[in-house]
Structures are given as C-alpha cells and as structure tokens.
Length: 101
Image (cartoon, rainbow, N blue to C red):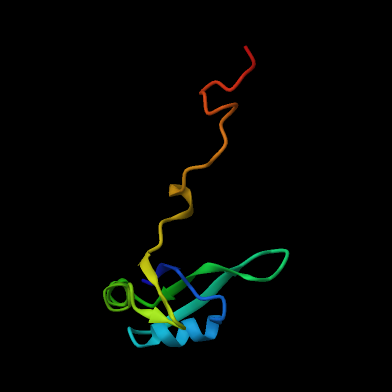
C-alpha cells in the first residue's frame, strides 16, 4: 500500500518533477506535488510525495530527511491524515466559550 510523505523546506525554485526525481532514488514515486498559493501560484515551500510502499516511504525518510535539494535541506516525514490536524479559531482572546460577557 502506498504511503504519503510531507516534505518541508522546499526551495521556491524546485519543481514537482524535480521533487519526484529526488525521491526516486529511494524507491517508486507514485506522485509528487508542491503546494502553491492559490492567488499568486508561488510555492508555499512544502509539498507531498507518495511512495509506492510504506517500506520505501521509511527508506525515503531515513535517506532524504535533512538532505539538501536545490540548496535547502528538506524536512521529510510521514504525512499525518487530514483529520489529525487541530483546527484554529475558538473565540475571543483565546478563552473557551468565546461569548460576550
């Protein structure tokens, strides 16, 4: 089963294809994408790479974490499922309840 990796610290000049080629040295890359700003199209400096197996994903983490690509060291880790991310917000001044008193 494939496994998705989070990749941070991506240089603004790095392309999705460059990211794919960099990760191909650790195994079969199913997909590679760099997250961009929806208005400017500029890279946001992070992306995701999907490896064909969890073994290859772990190999990529151990081989490529902190290793530079286009002059910047990458942060590579197993991506967390979308539901695990805490949501912001929550009221006024950080108090629970958030209502006017």
